Image (tube, rainbow, N blue to C red; front, side, top):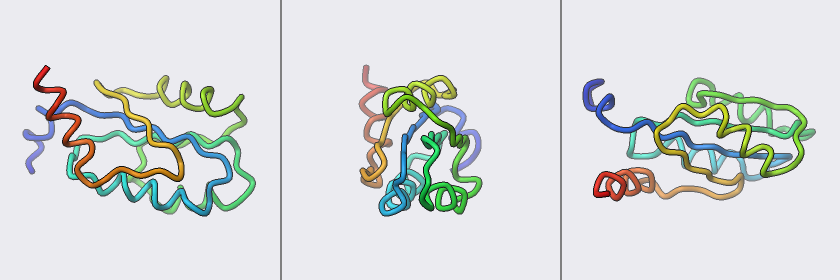
Length: 115
């Protein structure tokens, strides 16, 4: 896929909120990073985890566009922080512990373009 192809595809911001999710955050991250749709901005908002979540997230490096780890007021506060950081035309949320099938975002974009 060329840069021209990507630039004509809407940017999709995907947000994951997590707190102490070391057992399952890797699967969630891998599911976003392995999407068949390429124009994704991935944002992870961590609620100041005390387990190895932060180290796991950092191990994925540049695949994650934005990452913050700070105290929040719960899941919806974390989601709202992620939304505030988003620059995408569309925003999706995948909770820590959940995952996307490989073509999930591509299918959403195809449906979106039909509107």
